[in-house]
Length: 391
Image (tube, rainbow, N blue to C red; front, side, top):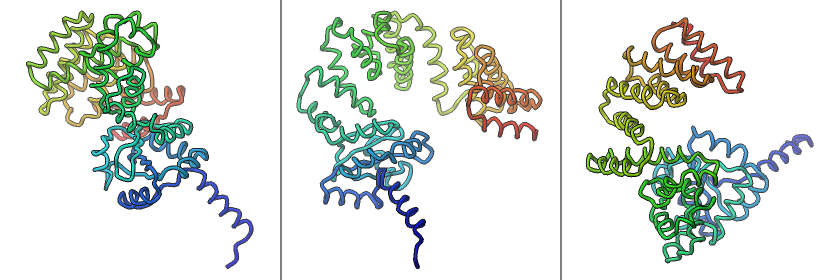
């Protein structure tokens, strides 16, 4: 059978386009490692899930890039592995994959060479690939140097930054780094942003420095330090609560001694967060605690009101009309404070769950209008409106 010139050109174009991006190996992990061993190459694994939006974005925008493809195809063996099935399940445990996409670089023996988390554009991905093959830049090399005893401050800062971005445990190194620095040396943009990026416990000297010098530190960064302090204290209290009353009492004592101005607010929030984490949930008590928190400590927090209201809509265990009505009031107040597509959609959804057809339809139509105005996707609300109309 003869192919026409047009067909041949079309086939050639398809092959050329496909060859421009990353070429992924087909086969199992054993065959992948054998190929890496034979070619003496590092393996790149795109650790993804089928539902992950950023994973799909990278697949559409970064992997097909010509420059990325050229470098990766020449220097690495690339592989894609779904973390929620088959060999991906054990792979995720072995390499502590907790977010998607995670980009893993390993050698033929399976030892970690480099790691990055999150969607990267073509330029970032290309640089990550180059870093993976540079022993002075890859995480495996940095870990080796740290474990060998290297403690130069510039090196530790690099080690902390790259490891934390890869969601690796750097508590020991972070404690060491901030402990051995004077406060005057910590007052730099680089150090302040390092604290914000990697320190997640209230006992760290870096956190204590930021708490003590919040106003001065805020001048060095655009990141809202008050939010960071609140979230770090909140996480510390929540973790202590899970460990038992002794640990929690000690954490509460540390919070009060710190002089943090919003200590009472945090403690009120921990009360209902802890109840939400319990296996047997008392929704009557939880709802009262949340409502008290909003009324006393966060009357103008539109975002959190919307988040909590939405959680009541999506939770099938909550069907009590009194509880749903309280959640509806949170959503209504959120809209009054800062009307937008998301909270108006939540308001409509709760009205629907309560069987209030007319009001739900009006709110859903309003949400769709707001989405069109802001350029947001209103397909879920349109689907909700169809269900409302069937009531």
